[in-house]
Structures are given as structure tokens and as C-alpha cells.
Image 1 (cartoon, rainbow, N blue to C red):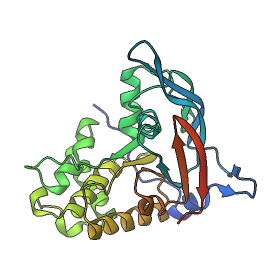
Image 2 (image 1 turned 120 degrees about the vertical axis):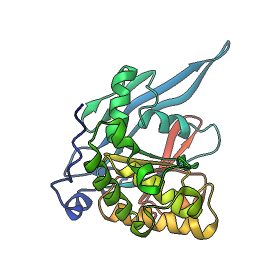
Image 3 (image 1 turned 30 degrees about the horizontal axis):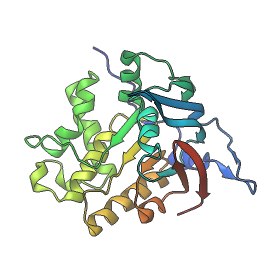
Length: 261
């Protein structure tokens, strides 16, 4: 079984970083490259009783390569539904979602699974590390599922752990690592397939202040190296680390603050 194309990108981090969107005075965005993520009038409606529930109401947004975006909003605002659709865990009821030039709006589950496994790197509040596996073996798991051979898996896992500053912890089990270090392993696992987007859902939610700062510094370093990051959070100080804060309320995209970092 052949694996995904996991070779290092040809462009340099500096090239990717410089391709980010420029902010104009009227709040519009322009970029020398097409958007990596684009929602076009996306609605998501659930029918759970007599009345339909509109979790998203006509959301239109763009995220360009190399941007660092935070998504904020109160409970029930639609940010979790937005995350599920962006991460190809769900599809819109109507509207279009275009990821890296591909319309994924109406894909079936098999094709959605392929897209999210190769193009989306997930980081959650819970670390979801297997307790009996070392750091590098946890990181290589997505590559096992993708059919990458053993030697290449270990090489790529080691490279990903180096990216997050854990070269001296590769053989440690999760219970031998601090909370911040466990989250770094989870980020390395998300990065190992070289996804288009790193999607982080409350990545500091289970961490103390020191570990939270450590993880946020790591995300900032990844952003500066050219990674595209979309972060879901309810914490204002965490949201403020991003270039752009997108606000949701009642299922709508209601505004944004630019150059927050």
C-alpha cells in the first residue's frame, strides 16, 4: 500500500510566510496566492425536533496560506460547528467549502476521511496519546494508517518531534512527560503528515499557565516557520496570540480583529 506524499515542501518557510494575506484599510484581504480555506455562504442546519437549528448561518470567510487565525465566540455561537466542517468532520447543509482548491462540501465519508487524514492536522484539548507507546511511536501513528514504511515513519516522526523541541524526549512514555510536553507530542503527531492546516481546538484547556505559555510559544514558532494555524479558544489571551481574531455569534461570522499578535 503506498503512502501519502510526505516529502518536505519545495518552498522555504520564508517563502510561505511572505505569502500571507495583507490587510487593507477597509478590512478586506488580498494575497498573491489563492486562499487555502474558503467558506462561501455556508449554512449548517440540524433537525432535532419541531424547529430546525441553524448552527451556521451564511458564513463566508477566507484563510490564506501561512496565516494564524483564532476563532472565538460564546457557547452556541457556531465555532465548534465551523471547526467540524473546516476539519472535514462534517459537511455543510448548503454553501461551499473549498480547501486547497478542492470543493469538499459534498464529499462522501470515504473521501472526507482521506482529505482530513492528509490535509488537516488536529490538536485537541485532550492529548489522546496511547499510554504504552513512546513519544515517537505516538507520533508515527498517522503514518501507519497511511501505509508509510517503517523506516520512513521513524524518520518523519523524529523530524516532527524536532520541530516541537522534543528531541530529548522521543523515547519517553506519556506518563513520563509534563502536560505541556504531552501536548507537544500531540502537535508533532498532527504535523507528521505535513498537513495544509493545523487545527487546534482549545490546545491549552488542560494545561497550567506555564505549560500554556510553552505551547503558545511553540505555535508561534510554527507559524513563523510558515504553518497555517486555525485555533479555537474561549480564552482572550490565547486568542490574542493570532494575527487575526474571527468572532462568531448565533451561528454567524460577526467580525474580526486583525494584527492581534
